[in-house]
Length: 337
Image (cartoon, rainbow, N blue to C red; front, side, top):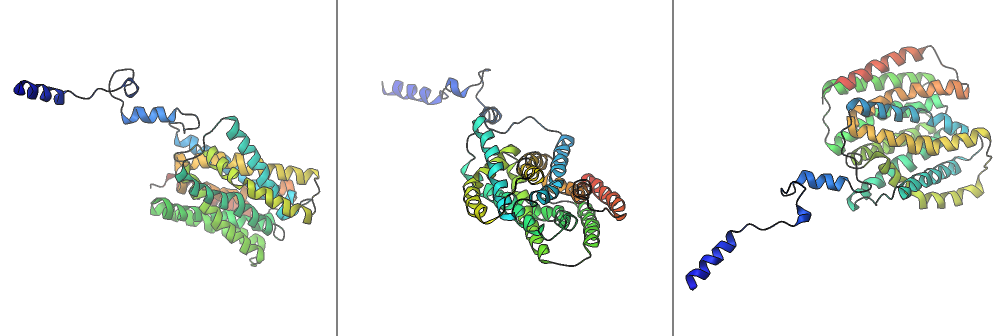
């Protein structure tokens, strides 16, 4: 009996464990990591796994740059009737309400706990820091002079991406990026006469915080849909925006003219939400360094809008700078690494 019991026990040990129906796919084979990931991606609010071509990603990033190029002109319009602190507060509240409404309507679950610190960086850089500092600068600076911040932003964003994500662009990439930044800086400094003012301090501060926000947002967009990255960052700022508006509105003039209303609505919805949605998505596809170099065209686009919307004069140097910038953009997109 003892020998039989021992043999029976060995047979029991040799039998492999049975898997439950929940652990087996339709084929009957044990579920693999890929199948598990596909089921996870099918959850509401999970990022889509369908591949996106680099051409589509570049187009999305370019649409974001186009949307951003209207930010300074729309802010200048808004400042015609709304004080700077009230303008930024209202911009934050309106964009947060739009983003929150989309998240609520689609029943998107909250991000993982590990993503909230990164979302806080996005909020501080792109929702609060950059809009506030550039708005304060535009009180005493023209849009042409303020364009220097976005002229240097691609290079600064590339540097932040190297430090934060470990990206290693090639030497050809850095050479083209530096050349493009030099062309834009030279053009914008010539436009402003080369004099440094208090507005420059605001612009350089905006440059740093925005580059940090772009880099962190691009990193998060690698595993979150781009619209959810900026959406949750905006929602995170909603309580602060409401308090900010309550404190600022009683102390500043608010005249809702056609220009100020249009400028506020575009800055809140077009630039702060929709523009960042396609921008972060594009950055996730083509990479932060390469996507950031598309912004070399942003100052020139801003100057074009400034001519048509604000009546500012465009010097003959603009076409030459445009050609130089486009050559640098092409070089960065073809560079390896």
